[in-house]
Image 1 (cartoon, rainbow, N blue to C red):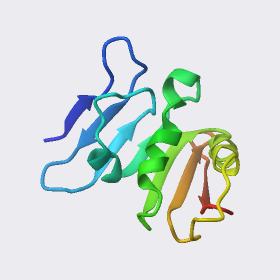
Image 2 (spheres, rainbow, N blue to C red):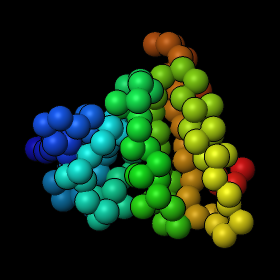
Image 3 (cartoon, one colour):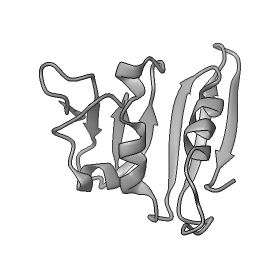
Image 4 (spheres, one colour):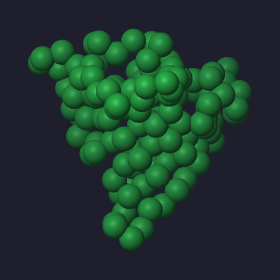
Amino acid sequence: MVQAEIKSLLREDISILIKIPNSGKHYLCDCGEASLLTVKEVQSVSAIFISHTHIDHFSNFDGIFRHQIGSGEKIVICGPKNIHQQIESRLQSYTWNLVDENAIEYEIREIVSKEEINVYKIRPPH
């Protein structure tokens, strides 16, 4: 049975963690402020689903990314049209001289329409 937990406090922006029994991987729906989301949970996230990039659904992406960097994992991000540009812009805003290019990989699945999904791969600093 799938277990969904709201990781935001009552007046915080939304973030929902989905856990699958007998699996060490988790899935995150939206990246709003999430005071109840632990570092360990973030490090177990293998996919992030972003409904849209209003600030209340996307503001905590950097905080989540911060705890995933260096894992060497591939993290899938699914989101709306242009999500690849928005993720890329967030990552380009940092200096990457201390991070190996294999520190993390994001596979971004941009849902353009029912018939079209574009896939991009991003590795800091590229």
